[in-house]
Image (cartoon, rainbow, N blue to C red; front, side, top):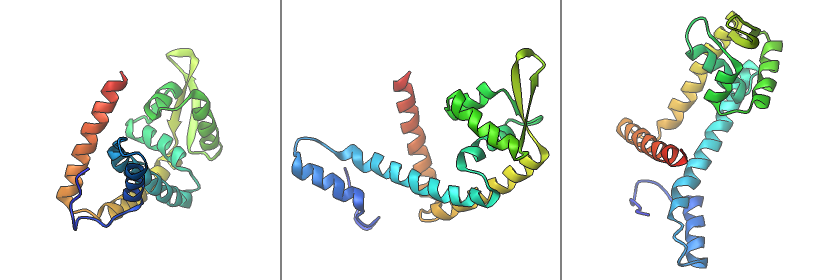
Length: 173
């Protein structure tokens, strides 16, 4: 892995990679430098987002449900299967989130007029207001964290991650 002196201080991931190089010289642990950091960043940002959304008494997973409904556009309604697919969740995981959100008055379940056996999940006005406020607060956290990089590096990082995600996704098909 190429290191750019002066760009960033050494971190724990550098130590892990060096330990593997020392203990298993032929292993080639360089991917750990990328994925170890991606994992750690995701965990740290996720924890920060959880604290942010807790001000609205929702979890990050519940925020994701509300945000998915809000992004879908009016009438802010999706079938549970559509929600689960967009969030890569099992139906069981989705049911628990929907139960909590419905009890809180943030979503409403109703019969699907196009499918007698189906349901629709609709964002309530209260849910819409909450998710819009929480989304702004969550984005403020993300902006603050990304301020560690200049804007052009943020754009480059987004491009690199898009390329990597696309390649990984394509291999999985």
